[in-house]
Every structure is written in structure tokens, then in C-alpha cells.
Image: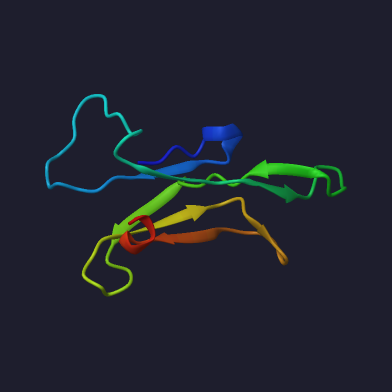
Length: 101
């Protein structure tokens, strides 16, 4: 599950261990999930200057599948407002089962 607007648009994804049963209704993410939360990034201000920040929007897009070839499902998460040394861009995070054990 993702919430790209969480924490003033820093965003977050929640990873839960699967049981093969489809979830329905309200799901309490607290005790069963691991949260990966984005952060604010420094961006170019409108009209110039560099003292502005923007949320990373972690979880704006994501995909699941075996990205590492280990037979386990991984989550590839986009953070579309990440700003690196070359300017605005999208950063991708790979969350694999080994990182949440």
C-alpha cells in the first residue's frame, strides 16, 4: 500500500507479509507492516533561489515482482520529486524481503 501524500507529501509505502488471502475492509497497518517513509528534498524555488523544499512523493507509483531473481516478491517504488546533483528527477527504491526481516 502507498500514501504519497503522507507527511506533507514526503510519502510512504507499507509492506506487509502476504498470506495469499485477499484483504478487504479496513486494514490496521500498525502491527503487521513495515513503513518506508520519504523525506523532503531541496528544490529550485519558483522565481529563483534554492531554499525551497518539496516532498519526495514516495509511493506515487510502485510495482511488485521478483526484481532480484531470488524467487521472492520485491517492491520497486518511485519517488518522482527527488532532486539529485543533476536536478529534478525520479529516484527509485527497491524494497526486498531481506530488507524487512
